Image (cartoon, rainbow, N blue to C red; front, side):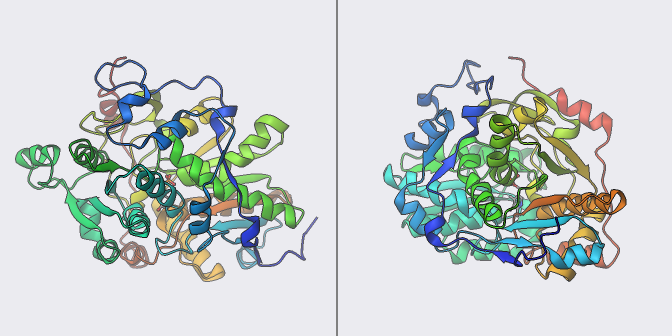
Length: 454
Ligand SMILES: *Cc1c(COP(=O)(O)O)cnc(C)c1O
């Protein structure tokens, strides 16, 4: 089955945009509840009211399988969705593989990544609840950009705490956010108690995602008209991202295809859950034989080397305690270039699916990732985000395996964003200066010591 007549790009019409998101909580029994960081008792909706609107808290805890997308959100989605499903003919030719490679491209919107898929509904539900400002953190800058875009669509303000090392590496990301009207502070900042106390002890601190989250949560919790928004990890974020996989399924159906493998990079797990969960639904409920792989950096090996344990989502212990794969909330990741993949933990949903053996995981090194990124750019013409290139690397590995075995597998991966703002990283790679970082076992052990006892 060669499927030679498949077009380069498979589109859906605006009318075919999915009407509901898929909530995998309905099909993943045995999930542990979030715990209150102070009492260590299961979180109740009231615990989260200080920073989230009720509609999102309900989605966070809902066990309904399909949740309707509000018409106003669908209307805004239509300006950049459905996103194309692309057949990577040129990459296939370059690799000389019998595999059929498909990718879902999420970089075709002003934020440049999949993150706008959740930024819009999050801004919408907060706006409906009368909230005037959203506070958030951003690592590489994609999430801050997406939320800046989404908040201004609803006439809301946006405050972004940007991990200091990223703010320095990516000045254009900061400028984009400001262009869309956000206030951006390098974190640790002197805007919050958390930031000030870190700076007092260590004025040169370069920040981390966990620390920036603490700042944004504190900002939201101490201002009545302000809520917090998170770009990954939480159930409602992954819920919104399932629009990716739901569209991909319809697109593959149109060309009479079904993937043997689904691959995505995994930081907090939102683009992974987004593309994978609608297919995982088929695996769980319909017994489909499909291999699903999460790809992470060897320098931040949350699934492949982390512990499945209860841990805080942030440095200051303000977020709920979540049962997840974690490297410990004090984990300070090495300065690798895939900023979006440096979080210490992983979504509870992805963690549970991995723990139950429903999905697999691979860890890859950044020099291999950039080699794959350049191969992809030169054949498929899109410059991939370093995060997305983790998925490309494993898709290429799998396609090359097919070449050895002669199998003609159908491989689908998520191209979560473009890398047009990541040229410093490409420069390092092209000039031979990029090196690989492995996280040493002693450091891992040290990270586990910070896990709370519950
Ligand atoms: C943020 C980001 C990621 C990682 O986040 P997930 O929640 O794991 O998806 C991956 N790719 C891109 C382009 C991103 O912006």
